[in-house]
Amino acid sequence: MGAQMKSRCVVFAVVTAGVFSLATISVSVAADILAPMPTKAPVLTPPPPAWSSEFTPYFWLSGLNGNTQVGPSAPVTNIDLSFSDLIQHTGFAAMGTAEVRYGKFGFVADMMYLSLGAGATGPAGYVNAQLKDKTFIGTFNFAYRVIEGGLYWVDVEAGMRGWAMNVDLSFDAVPLGASHTYGLNKSWVDPIFGVRARANLGSKFFVEGYADVGGFGVSSKSTWQVAGLVGYQYSPSVAFMAGYRYLAVDYERDGFLWDVNLSGPILAINFKLN
Image (cartoon, rainbow, N blue to C red):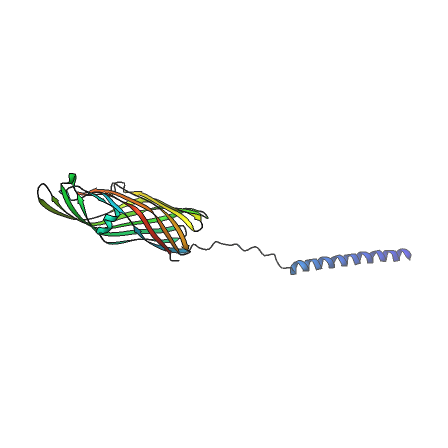
C-alpha cells in the first residue's frame, strides 16, 4: 500500500511538472505572437535635384585693340581704343549673363551688344578712317559640375561663341586726296571649351574664375577668354562682383579681318532668382 501511494505521488509530480511546462511555453509563444514586430529603419532617398536660375547684368570697362579690314580692296586698319575712348564713341551697350541649372547640369548664356563709332589710322598714318560698328557677341555653353565641395565648385563647359557684326569704314588717303567707304555684314560661330570655378573665402567673400578657348580654324583661327572676379554675397539672392576680363578673336575670311582683343575691368551684380 505504501509503495502504491508512493507511485501515485511520483506520477502526480510528473504530470504537474508537464502541465506547468506547457503553460510556460504557451505563455511564451503567446507573448511572442502578441509582441509588435520590429520595424526597419526607413530608407531615406535624396530629394530630386531642383531647378535654379540666376541673372548677372554687368558693365565691362573694356578697351578695343587690334586690326580690321572690311573688304579685299580696303586697307588693314589698326584700332587702339582705351575704355575712355570707347565710351565716348559708344551709342548703346547692353551686357548680361543668364544661367539655368538642374542638379549638376547647367546652361549659361553670356550676351553683349555694342554700337560704336571711332576714328582709326592706317599704315604709317597715311589713312584717316572712321569706323562704325554694331557688334553682338554671344557665348552659349552647356555646363557640368565635376567637383562640388562645401566651399568650392568646378564646372566644365562646352558650347559656342557667335559674332554678328555690321561694319562701315570710311577713310581718306592723305597723299592721294581720295575718299572711300566700305561696308560689310559678317557673322560666324566658333566652338569653345571652358572651365569655371568658385571658392568661398569666408566672411561672405568669394572668388570666381572663367577661361575658354576655341575657334580651331572652324570659323576663326582662334578665340579665347579669361576672367577673374572677387565677390561679396550681400544677401542669399544678391552678390556684388568686380574683376578683370580679356577676350580675343582672330577671324579672317573673304577679305574681312577682325583680329582684335577686348580687355578691361568688369563690374557685376548677381541675382539668384530661385
